[in-house]
Structures are given as structure tokens and as C-alpha cells.
Image (cartoon, rainbow, N blue to C red; front, side, top):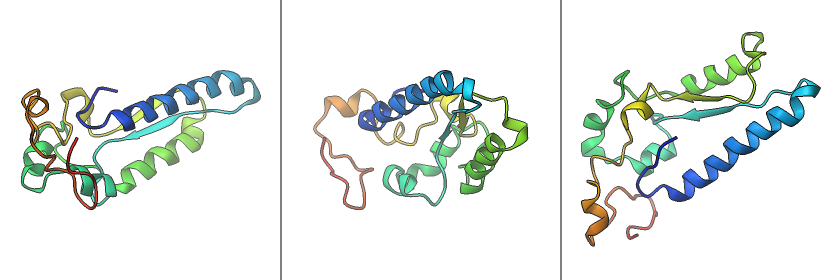
Length: 137
């Protein structure tokens, strides 16, 4: 939905999925097929949070999320159940963002640890990279 430092590869892939879903909604809608995308924000206890969050700054990053907390796997499951239920049967071609409103406030987890644009103009290591992720750009 917005750009995020060091996530170009993921952003491009996600944009492709969003475009694919929209086209499937148009092409398969006449056959009764719906196509939607669930976009999760920071979800506690997941691989993404383990790799991208900076432990000593997680609390201050969470404060940027309007609901003031990370999501849970159940939050994503509930959104999926909604789309597959009768309640969501007329939803088609939509992107359902489940992030506590974080995208509206730029509540991304990398923003505080790597100040923009200073980080990109420096030769600093990527301190947020963990668990085998490359530490240099």
C-alpha cells in the first residue's frame, strides 16, 4: 500500500498478487467466483516479525499503530473466515487490510530503527536483519 525501506522485493510481489486478484475478480466474477486479498500488518509471533522487528524499538513502533497492538494469527484467520462466509459473499476484487490501521500512520516496523533518508546515505549495516538474513544492502 505504501513503500517500506528494504522491502522492495516484497512490495513488488504483493502488488502483483493484488493485480492478479483484481483481474480474477473481473474475469471469473460472471462464474460466481470471488477473489480478494487479505493484507496482514505486523502479526505477533510470526517469521516476518522475528526478521523485521528491532527488539528494543518494538514498543515504540507499536505505539504508531492506531489500535496500539500487533495483530494475532486469529485476526487474520477471522478476516479469512469473513470472506468465505455468507457475510462476505458479495465482496469481490477487494484488498482487506488487517493491520490495526498501521498503514494509515506509516506504522511500519523498520521506520524507527533506520532513519530515512540518513540510513540510505550511510554505510551502516542493517541491524534489523536476523536469522540468516543478509546484513548489508
